[in-house]
Image (cartoon, rainbow, N blue to C red; front, side):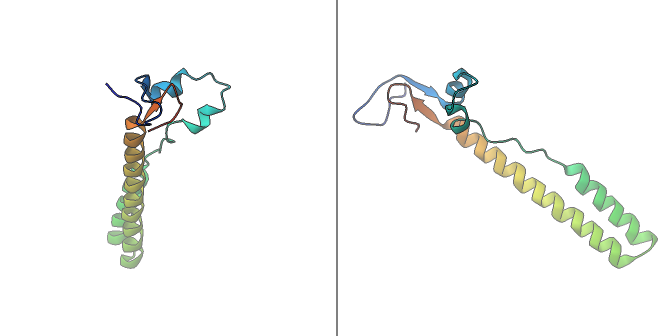
Length: 107
């Protein structure tokens, strides 16, 4: 069982931040402070489409243009992957947070 890490409090009335956020009323000013991280829309299909278009251009018309488009698609896909990985890390940290209901301190 979790207890508040504050030595002055020491309460066992501890709840996860996500459950605390869900229990807040819609008009509460605390909803913004304890909200989960914003979700990221993964658009891997754009990167895949750019790579396919680059390969098609590579064999049909211009080698340089095809390489530029294909590499651009790969870089876009890598950037999307980094955004999704950062969101997953932030969401994991958010789900691990708790709040003391007695002294209202998150930990």
